[in-house]
Image (tube, rainbow, N blue to C red):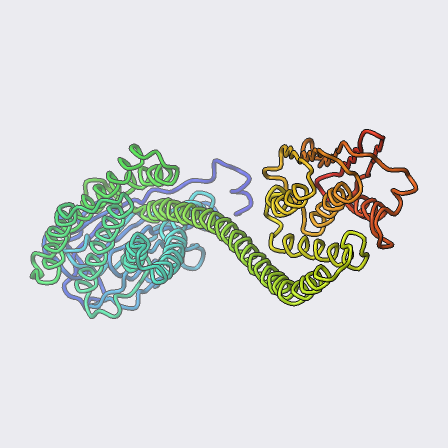
Length: 607
């Protein structure tokens, strides 16, 4: 039979009840309805309007007729809700019974019911559905919509109600719990991020309030009234935390917006705690209105912040809030009985709000992390630069200390040579000069003077470091050679070009000065010249030396060993020129001699 109904869409239908009646019970312990006093009504029914102040039991009787001349078909019965607890009986047989039918009442107001009716409960002819409802006048007591029909017509309605009233509520609470824990931990780790703290508090209080849509017992409270009062306190606390979250998110630090919210919320909380029973309904309605206004004010702040800042996270949050505002207004109007029915869509509203806020806070956190990463990169770069500068500074300091040590050792060596070997040579020279010999012909005296001059050159060159200009190194030798040339009656002219900033290492400078010293010594000893020109120039990376006199010249055979001491003379000059990386050229004629040396300023690698 069910298959036949599914194959025929026209068979998917609901059946109207012949009659729907109600009668108030006599007491909380009634097990059967009164015999008389029934009156016809329509569903859904809220008896607080018909029976003001009635706390107790109300009976509902719904009847319909099944055809007797046709096979009996299975029927699906759907009871949308009843407030607060009840018993459901079909043709005298009980099919549902809530645990608590007296205070504290079971909470079945948001619990849809569904049954498949068949024989023997369902019978041909007249059928009677009897529902006993226990409720309190302050909490919209009554019976919701009841539908009877084929499974194809009724079951989708029940599935939709179960999804909206139960499943989505559980999903919403699960998401909210996760958000409360996650952002609560973030706030605990970073107390300065108060936005996370307010959102976590809002989520936690909202969970306590939203459980009202799911729990079927008022535990741990002893009465329905106590449970409802605490539930509305949680509602006010959650919207107050949401308002504080909005102020923190929008970076509003003024005091008066907080006071504007705190005063009415605190007044409603005190009213819920202290109000007598006969005024609870009015206080609850006021609390709901204050909560709605506070929530709308917070949403308005967040939407205006999104419009002004145009930040991505604020815009997404504003879009989610606009969706939730419409749902909140609908649920409030249903609660205030402006709209009929007992259907609330709080789960959709809270999910939209939570997802929007979570996206906004996560986006902000990601942006902050990016800023921190960028700062770390900049900081690391600066640390690397500072470390590099420090390493360079330490290297320079090390090089300076090493150079100072080398200079100190060099000066110590110079002092030892000057005070030791120099004094010994000078004493021997003076002793030989005092004897009755021709000093110019005495090879020993000549050798001592050569050694003394070379020692002077070494001492003078060692007094300089590698940072001294070549002109400063030449000055002592120039001064000493000028005295020797003048004593020999030779006029000497010097031309120094481009030597400022020209530097040679100590070893190369010594070789260069020894070539110059040997050239001038040869002029004094062998040329019989009257004039000599010394030209030293540094240009285009090359060092040039030229010594030209107007003496009598010499023959190549004499040039190979002009000095009385073997191993000295022109051969030594050529050897030093090769170490400098240059070549020595000598042009000697009867009217004079010209010596030229060209070498690079920078040292070349030795093969």
